[in-house]
Length: 485
Image (spheres, helix red, strand yellow):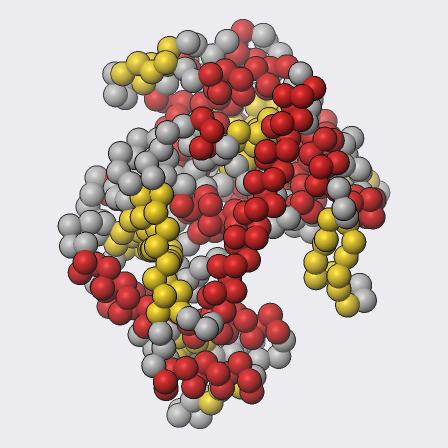
C-alpha cells in the first residue's frame, strides 16, 4: 500500500498522503492494464513508483519494469523522485541514456526499474525485436511498462508507436499516464488505448475506429478533420470508464490563481503591409534580391506566424553536395521584442520563462537581452534547471515540445511569456504546468503576445476549442465511473 504518511528525505519533512493518490494507486493495483488521465501536479510519478515498489517487492508480480518518459523527465524527474521519498528506499533503477556504449552499460546494470527517454525507445526495441522471414521475432525483457505521457504515442503514423505496438504485446502489466489524453480531439485516443488494451475497447484498427465514431473532411485520401458523430464522445467515454481514471487538478488541489494576460499588439502600417502582401500574393521580396514564396495554405499560415513574431525564414538552401545550409532569416518587425522589453521593465525584480516556436526567436531575444539563457539539452539541462529554481536566471527560453513535460520549474519564478503561441493544446497545458504546480506559492501570470489581425488570434481560438473537448472527455469518464461503481 502507498503509505498514509510520505517522508521527503531531501527536506526531512512528512506529508499526509492525499485521497486522490490512494485512489489512483488502487486503480493501478486492481487493473493490470490501466490508464491514469491525471491533471498536472497530481503526483502521478510517485503514485506509479509506489505501485511498482509494491508489485516488485511486496507482491513479487513484477521482476523488471520499463519506464518510458520524455527525455528530460527520464533523466531528471524519475531518478529525483526515487531518491526523494523514504518509502522507496532500496529501489534499484538504471537510467538508459547517453551514447550507445553508455546505454548498453545502463541496460546491463542490475536493477528492477529501467528508465529510458522516448527518443531512445526505438533503439531499445530494435535491440530485442527483429524482422525475420517477414515476421517480427523476439521480446523486450520486461513484464511491466509505464508510459509516462501516454499522449506522446497518440500518432498512429509515428515510428515510436509502430515499434512499441509490436513490442508491447508480450508485456502483461501496462500503465499509461497523461494529463492531456485528447489534446487535438477524440481521434487521439485510439493509438494510446491500443497500447494499453490491444484494441479491446476502441477497436484493433484505426479504420474501424474512425468508421464507427467519426465523419471525415478532406480531399481524396487526405483527411483534414475528424468530426465526432452525434453522441460519439459519450460512447467513447463509456468504453473507457473501467480502464481509465480521470482527475482534473482543480478538483483535488488548491493551487495559486492563474492569470492569463493577452497582450494585444499593433503592427505599424509598414509592417502590416508586409504581412498583407504575403497573405494576399503568397510571395515576399527582400531588397537583397531573395524572396519567400508560399506553396500551400499550411505553409502560408506558418510564414504569417513567423512575421507576427518578427522575422521570416528564406527558403531552405543547399550546397553543391546537397547538404542543408544554415537557414537565413530576415527581421521584419520588433513588435514582440519591444513588448517583452516592456514586461521586463515593468517587473524588474522578477524572472521570466519565455516560450518560443522558431529558432530565429531565440537568436533575436538573446541579441536583445544578452542575459537570456536557452534551456539546454543533455547534461546542461540539469544545470539550467537548478540555476532557474535557485533564481540565477532572469530570462529562461524554452520550447514547449522539449520542456513541456515533467520539469519542476515552479521555484524560480511565476511569470511566463508566450512569445509565439502553439497550436498544440498538450504542449500549451503542460508548459504552463511547469509553473502552476505544487510548491508554487505565488499567483501565476501567463502573458501571451498576440498581434491583432494576424494568425495569432486564430491559434488562440483553436486552443480554446480543443480545451473544451478534452474537458468534456475527462468529466464524462469521471461521472460514468461513479455511476457504475
